[in-house]
Length: 346
Image 1 (cartoon, helix red, strand yellow):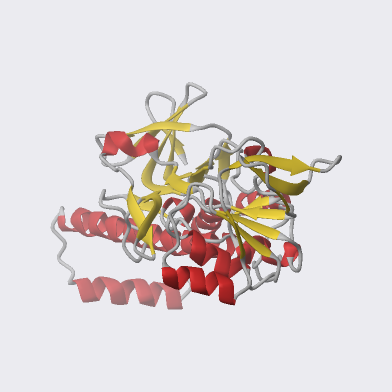
Image 2 (tube, rainbow, N blue to C red; image 1 turned 30 degrees about the horizontal axis):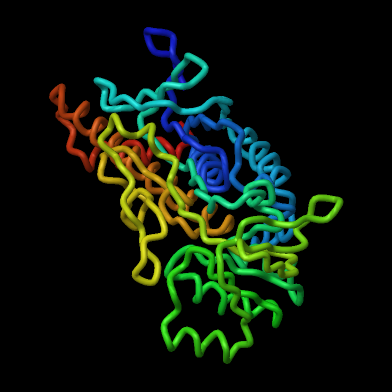
């Protein structure tokens, strides 16, 4: 890390986002002896959840504990943190990037790794948002075990709702499908729901009922029907939090599942590289349905690609510098001379 003429700190890489993908990327970069700063506003998407699941070796860990441990590990390898929100990104004259922050400052980096995650756009049902991540859920692989064998409701808002209900049926034989604003199931879907013993309730859901300690106890429809529920599965629209990249011309694209749009995310190649040279992305900003362990793996892969790109640039510069002044030695002679010096401990 160094300081530019205007006093702003410059790093090899600026990592935007301090969740699993961002921290994993920063850890990989630190171990590659790269200077990196993680810009993070401290608002993790999974903060309401009681635990992280499906993460081998860390099953059930509190989300904030996982991030705290991750930050400690990043710092161990020289990584730094800036507790702020990225507002915009500018391309610098040297080819790097300047990230403008909401605290009035900015940081610079030769490369940019975006791991800002996504925002959940929830159905507009009174009381639903307050229970999000606790009793209002979207991922059975993240939360299904915790509500197994209990009454589970599925709130239909789109064409994938029947598929969602059949999936949640794996965790409980007491599943209710609330038609709400979802489309009418076709004949095959009606047969599937009936065959699996999924009850169907017509009418829009207008209220969620809770216990004295604030946990979900039931769902009520506009017609007055009340159904006991311990968990309610919903399908939010997922939107990658990448608006700050607009100055670079990077915009999220629609992402589909089962032929239906579920939200928008950044398009990247297998390494995590975006269409803008020098910018990589990983985690939920790229793959909307990624779980924590997958996001961490994606962050590590993208960071390795970033490091390889930096190595290639440094090598090009070294070759160009060597070709500058005339050298009477052949390239092979130089390499042999260096090897000989190392053998003799020079």
